[in-house]
Length: 110
Image (cartoon, rainbow, N blue to C red; front, side, top):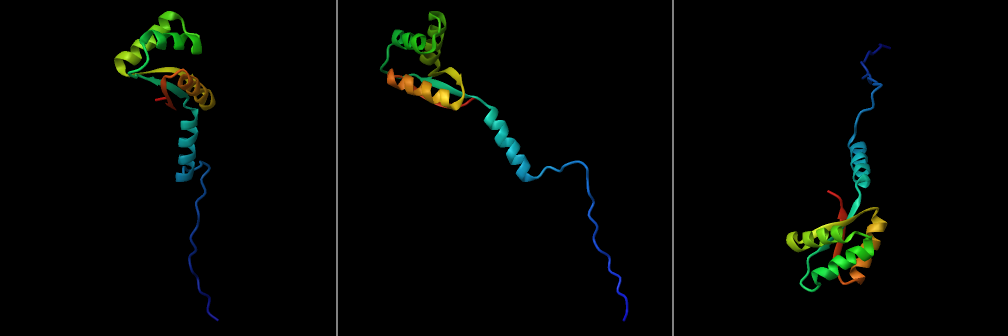
């Protein structure tokens, strides 16, 4: 019987963990989960400016000056971020704004 010598592939082990597509995706997801949510109020043709100012004061406790500044941003730029935080809190804020008759949405913070 003859001996047959074949070379076998050897694996090189590294002490440094290698990034795989799976770990990169997990890191992207974790990074995106860290971004807070925001509530955006949109300009509408129905509500008067003083009413929007009043709602911002009543719902968010803003001073008259801050509420007026946000209302003017909505009026001039078409939208303004009025609150930020967890998704649950932003859903609650959007519901309250809708109940007051304002157009509002929520999204991830940029």
